Image 1 (cartoon, one colour):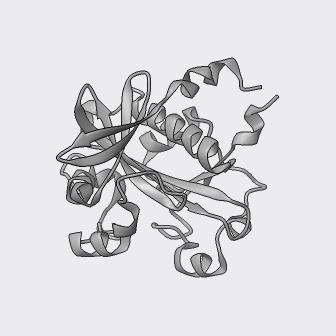
Image 2: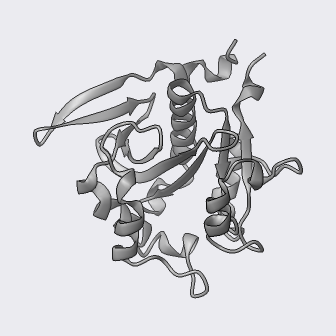
Length: 213
């Protein structure tokens, strides 16, 4: 049985909406909607990431932001505009306004898992619980649709506000967590150290099966 505190998350609907002649898929929540991003949304999401208000939460001189060209080449497969078992970017929408982006990438070679990333578009949308709500909605959606119970977020150790928000969503450091149980051998070589290196990448983990009683 799902815990009562999570019942409201089960109220989403997947809704196909015509926008500019194309069907867009939306996860509807209590306060926000998550819209699966298409190729046309890629530059908007990149610009939010490198905006003056947000960039210092994620990057510095030692860990520079990717160029637009690198971001486009590395992430273009995650903008299908509809749900994907492999992963996708989504727009976070509040009162009809795009206020951030959240993404998931799934791996199935070892223990199935989904890894999340998220950023808001500006200061005014931080500290309101919007990001945590987006994480909870997406986590429930991925679990319901792909059966995944293990979730990973790997923030910068210096991004204390993000870490605090992830903790509120149930993500924790765990002595039993081992990235080798999740990442493929190839991904371990390419991404095992994290975006900020071993010393500055924090591995946060959540096991959704713990919600079941």
